[in-house]
Length: 321
Image 1 (cartoon, rainbow, N blue to C red):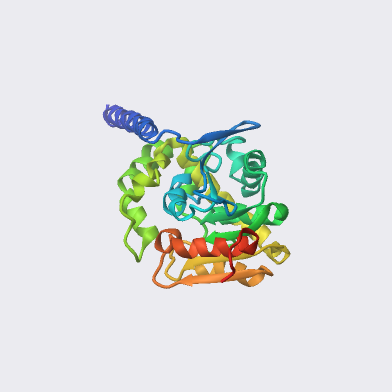
Image 2: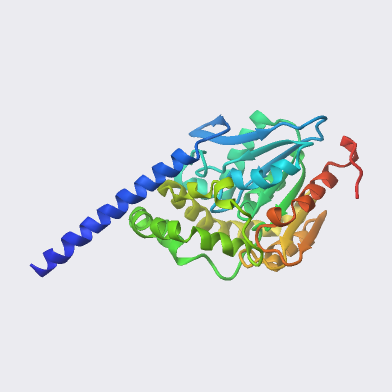
């Protein structure tokens, strides 16, 4: 009798939490519908938005977002600063409005790199500057290694490039478990994430204040959909082994690589990642921003644009500084 008295309320609570989570996912999808176009690939579509240059074009810039995010974060802050470029901002597979394509296997950054390049071969066959934030550093360096002829240069913004000693957070392990992952995501992780969005934003911007309206303009709440959250955890879990295997190849990079990072980044170590790849890439350069955390594109978008301009160089009438 006692067991029954405990189990029934627990089941009712679990059902209520799951219904609430599904409703929240549907609500954020309604609030932030797709605003761009889709590139058709095997297994699904990738969503992207494009901005055309005002006046003469200086070339093409491609923006790829990191973890717990989507295309809108980079586009909202860098798009207005890149008015002299064609700008393409993509949702990585399984994020924003892009399909996951190969399911859980798409967590592999090499697979994401291949899928993104398949899309870009359709929509941007010209050479471009690739700009990648945070976790996208892993897949963007793979693109630079495998398809250097397609790039004019690579700009990393607090990019993940090397193995790190602390591993990943415990909840990512649970969220990626085939057995308990779906239940854990819906009953625990997403309700907690919804309550902690402001705190999470503060941690990535620290020590600076969060950009006003960031959660809205960056469409960050799209992460609160169960499939997105699980894809995010799968990506994070897959990245450590990937960069461990890839890091010895960085001396093979054949194009300019600029690593821009904040000296106060507590999310992705400036020393382990940005400083290391700037040292190892033959044409590497490090830009360290004082008093800046994990969001250099918000703190100093003009520095990001300057790095892009230098990679494009005099071929588009721009002088090297």
